[in-house]
Image (cartoon, rainbow, N blue to C red; front, side):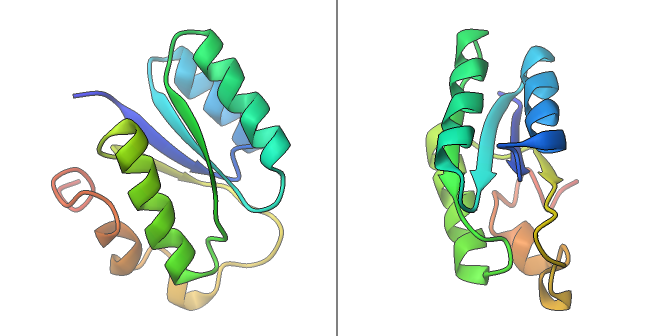
Length: 115
């Protein structure tokens, strides 16, 4: 099975570096962004250029519907998510979204809930 990592905030700063390092270690990367699609697309292109698969996915992790859609889009593009990196600085994560069962159940039960 492929190693697939979903990285929220993966378009800039620490998230960008986590995406690059994970790709160099053999992971396919789903890069979540809220506003900067151009930055996310650049990171995705960099990852593809080193032989890994990558996709940029818009979504606000403060909105449940966006989180569900983000997991679905990532899994459709890359396969089951086997790792999750949550990086964001634009506002606190609401208490209702702090790695609740809703977030984990949005990804493949065989990969996320089993770990």
